[in-house]
Length: 438
Image 1 (cartoon, one colour):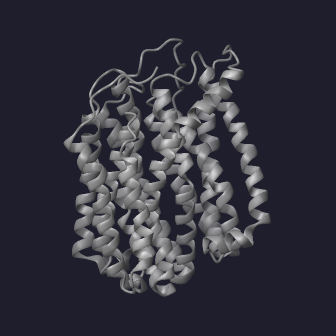
Image 2: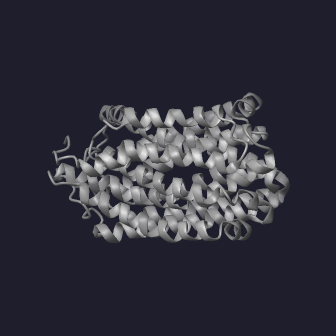
Image 3: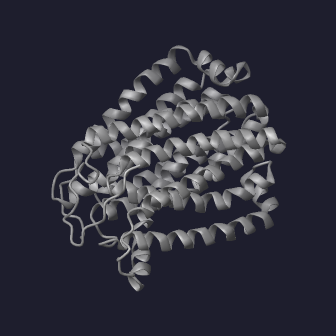
């Protein structure tokens, strides 16, 4: 992996596509390819553990992972804030960025150890609170969050520098680690807990590797930022408030149905629905990868006083290319998709799969739009998005949705409403370019 460049002392705002020397289309396609590879590994993960654990225990694992995904929003939010700040060169100069990141890493490592202890002490109440019938898996959700924050900060720095290749490799490596480590722990007799523990262990390994990559860019002569280091962290945390709220709402839209369905149907049906949801989210995962390109590119264009809307359109086009064949397969052969991917017992969710496929494809476009708006510094979409996101669990819990197709239909209607609140207005009224804060 090539050595990262030093940050110049007084750089101009980064132009889109130039930090790492990649063109916009190449960067977006590369990250999409990395996320697609990770998607494939995730499907293998689901297929293996759905068979090894059985539908009931897999439903428990899916609920634990969905809970983590909702609670991991601060990591995504910091990734947004960090990549945007690095793209416009606000996190230090002449190697100070490396010093600052190293200090943050030590703080997050200490926080992770504290959360390991807290999770172990309160594992039973956590399991009850999260509706996860695996206390040690519930305990592990706490340190998983802090590990995700660390990994997200590192990826945000690399994305802001235009080092998309390193980010893409880390995405694939993390997904591979989840599968290999989780399976090894299951085979060692740890069951659902072992399957879940593969996730935080893979994150820790990926964070160590990216930490080494970033350490290569440290300037030995860099001055100690001192108090400025803490000030930058506080500033980023303040900036992360809007992304935390926005991505928290997206996380609810993406994952709350898998949690709620366990309260509405039998365990076997809930496990089948969780598998269908995993298959449907292939497009969302692609959008997550593309967003790593979208945020710094949109921020860079805005900082340079250029219109950033073409970046959003390019990102949506990349995701649409992935969505089209995926939706075709889910619509024409839903039983075959579930049987090949997860096993014959999961075909009970075949009727819900096409609806979930469309719903998650719409959510992927909404997700890209939210990240684009965060990149250009807009937060006016929060109120309408909040109304839709908070209505979803109410609608899912309030109705007599004992059929998976009815449940999935409500999810689709909610996603269409979210797109109507965020995506459509953004496409009809593109934000004018405005210089970002230096």
